[in-house]
Image (cartoon, rainbow, N blue to C red; front, side):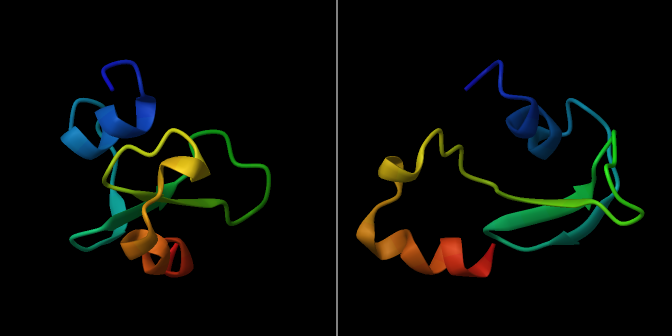
Length: 64
């Protein structure tokens, strides 16, 4: 999805420093933290809503 800020971050269109990265997820600091430590963990595949997650991807949600 073109307008998704998270997809743009993952593609490198918006620069950020990844704190963690593997083949399925990335983690990075929130640009507007609400706590001293505020880390966002997002899947590399665009998932608009939970209903879009297939049965074989349920482990991805657990990983996040």
